[in-house]
Each structure stands twice: as structure tokens, then as C-alpha cells.
Length: 419
Image (tube, rainbow, N blue to C red; front, top):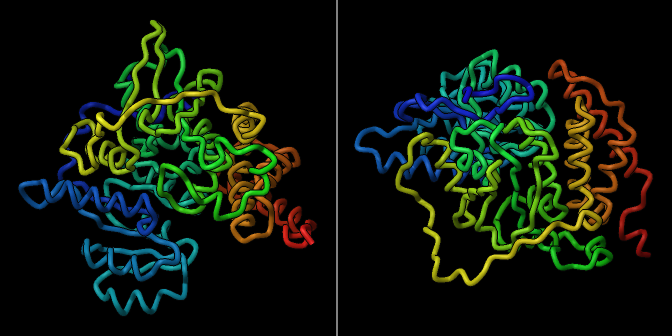
């Protein structure tokens, strides 16, 4: 099985078994103060504590958005060489409190940091498309990418695949579902795969009538029954947009056509996904709903080390439920297959429109039920073009955001409608 991505339609997530030990690797974490970033640093702490010497991982760079206090604490704890903050106003404080650390600030700070530091690995955990330029820069430098950011492949899959091949980079999935598929494949060729099935919790509205769901409040949408995540991905789970993004990402990661990628509801979130092979046998990856396990799997692959997650308590498992998703109630799922079929900049439009619509919902400017509607409208209105550069992706991103802002600007906020 070839390592890395051999072609745009080939598998991105296959890795040579001779990658070697993780010892002595230098890690940059994008989105270090978010849930994935915090868990990644906890796993690094665990792995280094288990090591007999200085530890397998040295954290050399951290990038965050607005949470400067947390960024400073992390920088001190890991004695990093560089930090990046999206907020330009943080420059003087970071320079004052981290006098021996190289400081980058502003919208391009993560990219500038990746270009400046010497590293071997990047944890791409920055929410949304903001981390895309920095992740592409790391790919061009031939680093191993621990990919937790769905948007990298959703928005720029046609760009990422040839870059990985050209620069000898490696991509390892961190999302629990894609990590599960990666582990189940175990180096087998995709030709032996009949289908992959991504499991979904169903979110907080699995049993909620559609009419009631469309009017859900922000508080209700953020009340995920299984996972503890940031607000954006939690809203995506409530709309099942997260699973739509994962379908597109799986298409690129595993080089499979959309008809071989399916979704099933599994509210217990214990079976993280499974692979059905041509001989009708099925392999599943099972574990507690804790992101530390897939993070550690990526950091230590192809080895297995003692875990820092709680083990699964089989005595408390009385039954597992699997049921097909209602695509009428969750229309985001069908949009994913439409995006794969359209190709080109459709992924960038899809992702950007969703980010903008979710932000509007969290700010109370639109109803919950309008999120997916607005994304569908943006896709219908967009002129889909081939992806041949980062500028092309970013222009499609900007156009989609402008479309959503313009569309929502003509709509009354929910409070006004209610009156």
C-alpha cells in the first residue's frame, strides 16, 4: 500500500510502516487552546511522562485565536520556541510575558510561525478554514500532519492531494471516525473495501420532531448528549453537518467514491466507525467517546502505547443502537454527496457558507433551521470552478461568506419575526 497520497483520487491516509519511532519529534499545534489542542497537549504530557528519557515529543510551536491567557500558560508549560495569536493586539503582551519566545500575531500568524520553526509534525486542530494556509505550508515542508481540521480536505482536497505527494508529507487522521477507519484498514488496499460506514451520535435532536428542531435555541443545540466539544462543531453535530463534512473528508482520505461511504446513527458513540470488506466481513474500532485515544493513535503510529483515556467498561454496556439517518430531517448529509459530485470549489463554498451560517445562529441572527438552508442556497448560487491554487480556494471561501452575509442581511432576526 503506498504511503501518503499517490493521486488526488488515491488514499491520503496510508502510511509506511517504516515511519520509525516517534522519539525526537518536534510538534506544532494549531488551535492549541481548543478542545482538540488541549487534549493533544495532555496526550503529549502522558507520552513524555511514560518515556524513560526526555520524551518522544517536544512541543515547539503553539497557535491560538483569542485565548491569550491559555496560550501563555501553555507556552510556559511546554517551553516552546514560538507562539502565534490571531489577535494583533496580543503582540505586546505576548512579547512581554514570553521574552524568549518568537511571537507572531495577526490573521497570518499561524502560517508565519509554520514557515519559521523547525518541526517534524503538525497537529491541525484550528477550527474552520483559518488554519488552511498554515497546514498547506506544513505539507510543503514535508511534515507529518495529524489532521483534526475537517476543513483542510473539505475546502482544498483537490489541492492537498498533489501537494502531499509532491513534498513527501504524511497525513494521519485524528477525527475519531476517520481514525477508526484508518485503524480498521490496517494497511489494506482500498480495492478490498466494499464500503466504509461513519457512525454518528445523532446529536441532541435525534428524537426531536423536525418542526420543533428547526426552532431550537442555541442552548438546546449546544447540549450534546455524548461529546464535549467547542461550539462550532457542536452545532455541526446538531445539524449533522459534521457528518457531511466527514463524508467529504473520507472521500479524500481513503480514495473512495461517494457510493462506498455511508453514515449510520449510533447514539452510544462507542463504535467509532467500521469497514465492510468484499468478503462481507466487517471490522469496527471500539472505545469510549474520548478524543485522547485517536490523538494518541496518530502521535504514536504505527506503535501502540499505554493509553491515557479511561478503558471501556463492558459491564455497563447493555446494548448498542444502530439506525439509518433521516435525510429529510438532516438534509446536510445529501449536500455532502452533491459537493463530492460537483468537485472543484464546491467544498470551499460548502464549508465557508456553513461557518458563516453557524456563526449567525450562535449570535442569534437566524433560526437553527435556516443553517442548512442557507448553505444549500450558497451552493446553488455559486459558480463552481476547478481548484488549482490556494487563492482559488480562498476566493471561493470569501464569495460564499459574502453571499451568506448578503442573504442574511435581507432577513429579519428571529426575534423580529416572532414579534
